[in-house]
Length: 596
Image (tube, rainbow, N blue to C red):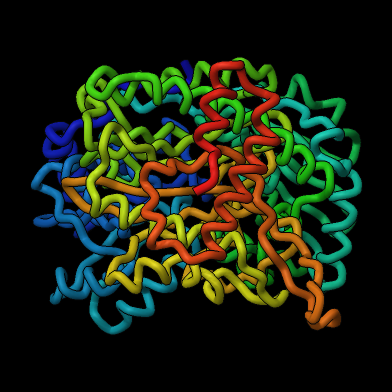
């Protein structure tokens, strides 16, 4: 299997590791050290070598950081992880609600007499450090760049990832890397910039039409790149990764050892584009006064998928939908109390593996039954594996990495007879998902302008959820992709070709969780009769097809437009997925897609 269920971190490991780090702090004469969940490339996902936060604290969430002081260690976590962190960290750590409480504000409170806080300049961006320093100005608390102190305490730290790079074929990429480089270089020249430093692995892989396996579930290569205004690229990479791609890269991509990166950055002349949100501090320091702050030049072009990527995503989702339907049909035939969460994960992976285009799952499958479903990013292990009991809801959030697309789908499934209050909450979540699916919005709006549509049905019931409504998704790349998001903090205008998740939820700690997720691609909407033809409006064209559990729907809580959308969606699901599944699954699908 791609997924395993071993326990990777235990709370009891935290105290001795924290004590070891504090001993190093004393030797270095520091009052604290910041431990982020980050690597030098500054992507969202990290390799085993860079899981410093999990190793130190036991917390395995995909976002957060720890600030270790002499007498307190704060673990900063956002709303997605406030239930999870309670089970994963020992009481020597103090959970801190973030971003409500910033690192700077917390340090001001904890160190009223000042202090020196160390940080690894490879693992923090200038934007992060500047924000903290602004809050700390005049307090006597200073941030000090230093070597990584966790690495000194981690005796069996894994080696750097070294998976070979592979060519991403033009039939899936839709544009040669020669054309991409030329197109992006022209924008640099227009902006008066001589070169751009790129650190995000998915940006470099997209630009050069390569893929890799350096980070679990993400087909990326860990490397650095400099894009010149001429269209040429200097690629800094472990040479052992290059055997399969040297010919593909061609003469305009010059490969260097990764150790040469910082010196090369320091020797750049003229204005150099850096992205303050993704470049490491040490790189910004090397560029110095020549820096020209701006966005990663790959970010927006990568997010706006071309026709080949959109078509590939559509096909990948149909095959993936067939695998999900096979799983749902099988699951419905099992009696409550006879299955566990890991068995569901295994069966779903087996269904996906029948597709030869599958390269990996796109993230660790979330299979949470009953109270585990309320842990938003629950990872089932051998120790937490729970039985699907009568009256439970099962949150099943999963996806696949296919050569032609990346998928991400969540379904909440009734096990036996579901509770009435859970059904009411489910119907509100579904209404929010449908509201976003039906929405048209003027071009130029961002995620923060429209995401309330997906929350409104819950708000009317004095309910909400503590994660974003949706995230961007790559094309056989990272399942979480920026810069687009459906979030109240996102200001990036949504553009045609962007793929986004639409995933409202509801979570009642200790009882149940609910999430329903489809992927959509932003598309120019046709004006209906009577509409203003001169206005450019966008809509989200649904990419995900698998039935929504009608047993959890309270029809009386649906308005006519929502009911009609659900029935039309199920009819389309039956039409598209029915011919792709087994006879038994198709018979189940016919029933599951019956009109409400």
